[in-house]
Length: 255
Image 1 (cartoon, rainbow, N blue to C red):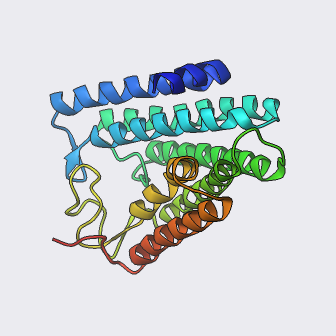
Image 2 (image 1 turned 30 degrees about the vertical axis):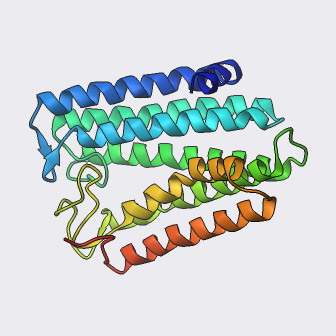
């Protein structure tokens, strides 16, 4: 881990430090989680910021590290700034709404809440388009100094990351992440995925983390480019199956 962070700090100091800011936000959210009893949709208001801070911290460091192998350094610098601005806006609004005892996503209960939700949506669209361009650059570039297995793990990890990031649009259209029931029902511990209905967040979660899982598998376990591609496609099919389950109102586990 130390070598990873040392390298990241060298190749992308902006995302290195932004990642630490996200971890600091996760720590602050943990303290507030223990110190307050404000609830939103039946759970502590600070669980959501905690989850988002951790997720964005991991994503920031992952993308910052992977982009070191792109030749288009100007594009890397621009996207790094886009990531910081858009994710900064996202986490600021999520935290502010939690402090107010208000939902951050799908909240159009007032003009102000609606504006905040739309700003978040715009930020995510900009970020996703930027990530899609970075994905395109990985496919366009032909020469790499890393094994072909890792190249394909990165390419497909980014591709599926963008695809499942776009799944958020389905939630926006429905103004909910639960299918077959209201948001906020009985859920699994901490992640709060519905135990009674379909939940779009599950496939969203696994799809987004293809960004970490596919490069790791491809580098440490895949013996060939073909093996890396096959594993990646199977992972995509499994994540897509979770999306189909959610759209049909089926929970991942019922108890």
